[in-house]
Image (tube, rainbow over all chains, first blue to last red; front, side, top):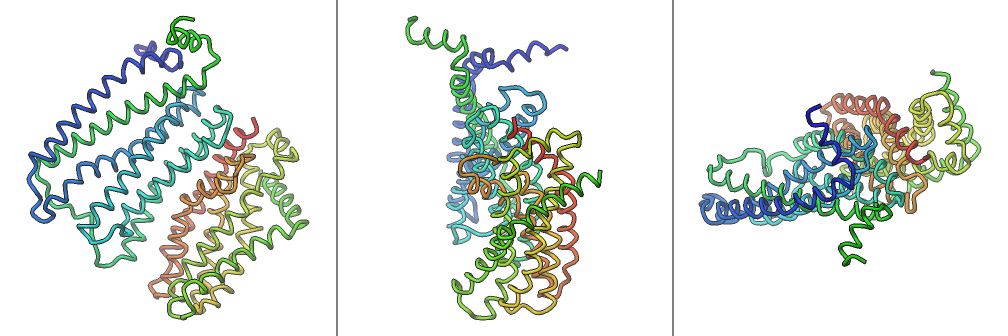
Length: 250
Length: 222
């Protein structure tokens, strides 16, 4: 295997310094993409002819929604790897991703409410997307609550992995059933699906903001994963060596 | 293989039969929850008839959830679960047996009593029959998905609240199609599509959920 040497980073002792080296790069990319995206979104993009300036919340909202869905899949991916190959790091990655995913789901709901108020005159409507996003948020909370409730970290990881996989199988079912429910119950009210043709510059702004959030998610998850590694491996020799070195070599 | 499942079902039914209070309390909880709603929203029959399918289905969901922790807890504490896991049969099959037993002990009585609650909400006869039928078809899904949650929270502190947090979001499709079937029957649009989807969920849940629950049990038993 050509990439066989990459597998060594599955060991926390090898991953820890690698993550430490990568984090500044992802912060840098997040800042760069964020600056471009916000500049395009706030200064270059014209005001919408229907929604005025209010639509600009889209630059935060859409990226956050995308990331909240994407991170759950990533989390389930690590969970599956962890269950299949019994690697310690996978479970740590899943636990490190969950709070960020929940945060993005929350931001998506919150900005959605702020957007909804001026556009539809209501903070909340039981639209299919909003409802699914809300339950995605609950799925994240359930994952976090379950993994925090189990003291033994290995058991916590594997139980969380089973839950994440059950969740990721269920998400499409939930989404489509909610969508169906919505079309049955909501006759002629707001439709989110017919998206007005979007100016290219808005789309670019949105994409750069989403990229910035992606890079942020990677950076912050790596930081959290490093914290989890230190906590769980605190009895390992390399952690002791690292910490005594950091404390001034005593 | 059927004999293995059958003996697990028979054992769990016998255990439930010897402690009938457990099953009754779930039923009475169901009736109580459904009876609270008219007090909360007022006794106008129009409103109640409109609310009935959703209220009764949500009540059934909550009642099922309350009965879930008992699914594995006692076997876990007296060591029977470990013995089951050591048998040469696949643990998934044994969990399927326990899921079916749970359905017989909790889902079936809920389905039988649901029309009675429907009467209190002034539902027409067709809707009453549909209420019973949709609960009957949907309940195995609740037991199946619930088994995963029950296995994951086995022996944890605050297991009950945690269980609801894990399981209720996964119950949404059942609620939508179950209550939707009754709604459709009231509206006269035909409940067939809802029932088919409900049955599909049940078949899927019975096929896959026991294996996920078995994996979760093995984690808990380690």
